[in-house]
Image (cartoon, rainbow, N blue to C red; front, top):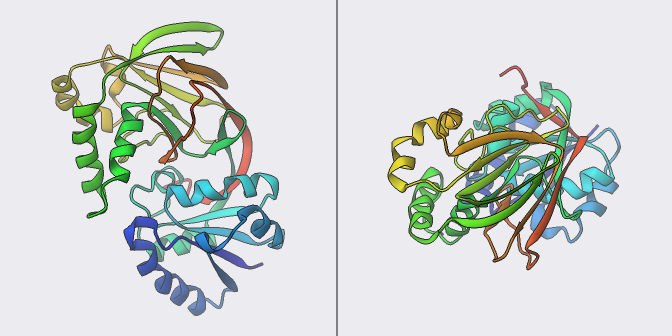
Length: 293
């Protein structure tokens, strides 16, 4: 068995680059076989993953976006996935109980438990393992991608402030669990895990292995009300607000009459299609984590 480390030097705006020698030190010390592949240097991630031995472990050394880039290959050519989180937000690591401290993440990679987890698919072509955000959350990601002079949660805080100034609620059409909803939204979160954005638990009851996606629909609400309740939204108590509605489904259809900002695992969804079909793929990926943490 070889640990195949797929390293994203851009992740965390330098964090992954700094973490690589630490990872190598611990693996050499433990006499573990490993190989390193640079994410952007690989033209086809699916071909790379196919070339690995079936017992090899694919290690994403980067953030949620690094993991997302590997999902198509892991679906076609199943291998166990481990994560050493060095991205900006690292929501998947939170969900899987993986420490953001590199030595502890390496230990989980070597001794953690593999679990079959679900993933989501958008329009039969884009995949997510953590979740997707539509509306305000998508706008926050757009703003965050434009901030290049800092890293960490500071980026997320500034991006929220900028999104507040630009984003307006949007009328949407939803087909969900046999019903039809036509309403204005502030944001719609589709969670495979509980965490979204800067660690907000907007779908607090989401489980990664239940064969379903959790939904948080947030109706328009005043900015002051958001600010006053930000702690509740972060800690998974958003449903105490009348504007927040939680649900669970295996598939849904979302449509709008104008383009709306959307992200999946923090990646901006680039499409002119105003209609999206979202579904769960149960038990799709073997993810190594500290599931009792």
